[in-house]
Image 1 (cartoon, rainbow, N blue to C red):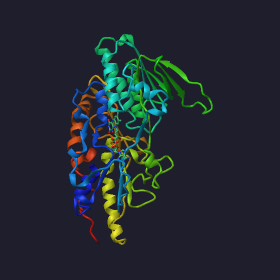
Image 2: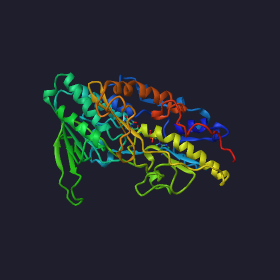
Image 3: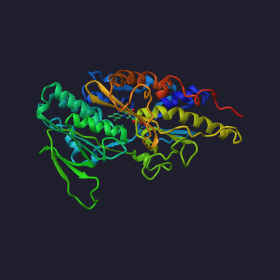
Length: 406
Ligand SMILES: Cc1cc2nc3c(=O)[nH]c(=O)nc-3n(C[C@H](O)[C@H](O)[C@H](O)COP(=O)(O)OP(=O)(O)OC[C@H]3O[C@@H](n4cnc5c(N)ncnc54)[C@H](O)[C@@H]3O)c2cc1C
């Protein structure tokens, strides 16, 4: 929606109906809101996280299709269809999540986020286990956000002493970027949460409330699993490309749309572009990354269209995306750590002149809780938001409109 709105703003098409948006769902989800819901920071207002797409699109260019099997042709294609949650890759997970009596939930899906919120609120004490699978996942910091919010709520209920909290992550550290990882390690230690590194959940025995982990370093032929009992389990699924994307000619071996990491143009077809979770871009999969990627994509789409009209035109597809991504990590007690980095984990903090962003602050908490959701629903789909450039379009996006012959 954001890319389509930016294409209109740049006048790359002569009329809005020249753009068609296909989405399998009539509803759009503000996924970062799932964390707030599962951690008890949202009320019961579903509008905060789930809204009809039609409310945010100019009706001329939105077309919702569900598996009609009809083929459409295109001159230019932008892929932004996200990735797939694979709860089914953990044996017994779907049954446990679907069973209202089983104390297992997940903030990665709206229904399961509501369930884990209810379980967290009603919890009376015992062993709490939270998991994080191998990358790539949406928002690499999200799985531990729930752990901190849960720890805070146990303190507020004055049952913290009867809660034993464990975080099993497939990563070798708390976070992929060392600066934030070190700071988060100090936080888990202070909060008496026990981290276990390089463990991935493989199986759940919900009848006996046991989860089984495989050590990442284990040889594939070794089938010993670590058995961990739980009274409350927060599960995060592996995330994989959509099957239809994985088998497309423009995708790489891993199944993601294979695009140049700085231009967002397909490395195989120059009229195909991709951004966000479905792309091969080697950065952390976040909405913040999408906000930085979309103006780059639209500019390079424009330059490609110009070059297709006149190959001697004095424009080029530019290497403008630097991998920017951001992970706002709730750490409890109305504080948040705002991790911001580029490709290869290079730190790039917006507020570094004022604060070391590995230190959680209330200011970041209020930004994340109130400002970001507002911006997401009100400005992003209308091409009025450019990530940390805020409402000011980056210089490369300003200027030329339309696709002119040179
Ligand atoms: C629990 C959680 C917490 C998160 N926290 C944060 C955060 O704090 N900050 C942050 O920046 N990011 C966060 N994220 C990540 C962020 O939500 C995603 O990275 C972002 O939404 C990716 O945008 P996208 O457009 O690539 O994919 P999506 O937003 O997933 O959109 C994909 C779209 O494609 C549609 N689609 C799917 N399949 C098909 C198909 N076959 N045909 C047509 N359409 C299809 C879907 O219906 C959907 O509308 C979080 C994610 C989760 C799950």
